Length: 450
Ligand code: FHN
Image 1 (cartoon, protein in one colour):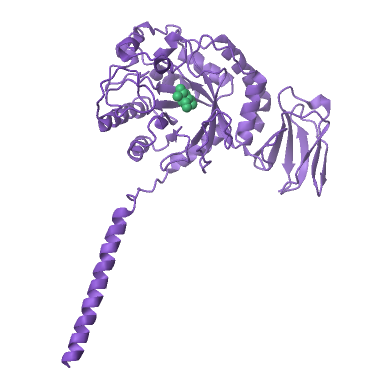
Image 2 (spheres, rainbow, N blue to C red):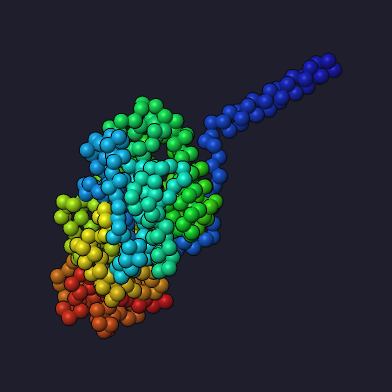
């Protein structure tokens, strides 16, 4: 009996010990596991906005700020090692009396663009809007004293154009942007500061942008790469944005796979999956709407001496190839300090608009087509219509791989006439008579059998 009870007691102790060990292990594991991120569930209005974004396909990027006064691009403070004490003189020279928000919006519309993404704050930290949390802004430091983002927001709303705000995480001016990162090391700031204070400041300005300009399209972040190992509190910042405006699309130009809480993914100076410009080496295409951004010459901010203009053909090809890669095209201008967009850009943007007026059906509302991008061109798709974009091909016929669905009919977009094609088990042969060739993009629309 005594033996029996001691055996039971032993068993009970073993079970208890085992139970305790398991509990402790679970607790330990819970500690080890990264904090359970609240799963980001985009609001239905955000999903709808993503669909709008993918249909829109084409936007105007605007890099504009006090740096425009020096006409040497938006990195002039860093590149010329200009300390804050000197750089602080620039805003007094910034007086864009020729700025006309209506004219900018009208140009974007005439170009066939559906949204504008403008720098609310670039790396020099200067706010192109009326900020109550800093006097380093266009109201307090320039003779112009007007909120250009407000003027633009009003005109965009009136014209049915969505407005996005580019916002730099990186800040070469704020004393609490500390520890410093890879850039802005010659600003002359004291070697101290409180990182959390800087992040609070950034969130406070984002709150202003999400509160004072009506409904906005979203936020285009940049500069994370200056301190890739820092704790940027992105989850908190993204939640702030989505709490204030659930439909607002958040994108971050960190050149990595999208982070939780983001709504679209951008690629800089490259089509998704490519890395000719060197920004996308660590990037991985996620499952979010995609966007490629590019300059019209070689500069984002106004550069008085940059004459390396891309041709209108190159720009149209970029837009079409982006669409073939299931991505939007965000094309940049760097306005002059007086507020005008230089004439070379205006001419080319209008030419793109004329082309889109005739060929827009093969771009707007489409997604990347069934035939993946090729040297000769790309395909886009909208419902049961596949658009074959022949960008670079010299022959009178072109062979495509077999499509999953048979082709019911085909037409040349140039004149709407019936297009000749042969469907064979090896693929699809399309005839391209010289009369339908377009100087930029010869498009054949295929109606597929449903
Ligand atoms: O440093 C910026 C640059 O000034 C510009 O804003 C581009 C736009 O995509 N992004 C950064 C360079 O990667």
